[in-house]
Image (tube, rainbow, N blue to C red; front, side, top):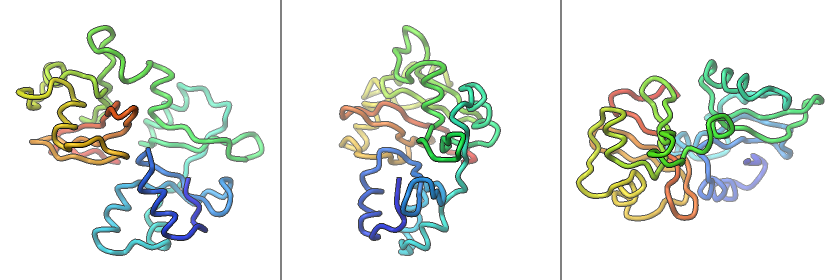
Length: 208
């Protein structure tokens, strides 16, 4: 998480090296959660040259708290109902114990996103409203076949290969990529391989 009491340069350095698109922001200690910051908001602030502590706080989303005893399926329902991707887990005394993401819950319930598509067909997960979480090792042909998409399959064979080819490097943290008629948001990079990607058609942008 990010401590808003830190120096602005330290905060920016932490944002730059973040492995996730959503970061909890707190004041001095993790129990004092201010809000949840989406890295996409930071990008907007950079573009308009208004990157300071006040503007960062203004861009944070209200944190969502769940008891640590909440069953996984209840957490998943709450995430879907509230259109959330992250929640802070608290104990019976209200102390923050950690955080849980939508991806964490889905991995617990249905297994790793990057399972071999041919073996279990779990590379592609619909999140609703035309948005999909896709494993980086999914083949372009399978994605096109299952989703009736038209991604370029003339070169790279997998989604990881296609995105790496476009970027010409492995990203250190989440980035968004405009494809021909599609948008890809890299969610997870591990061992120098793009593991999970959030994708949708450009004409069906997600709500959040």
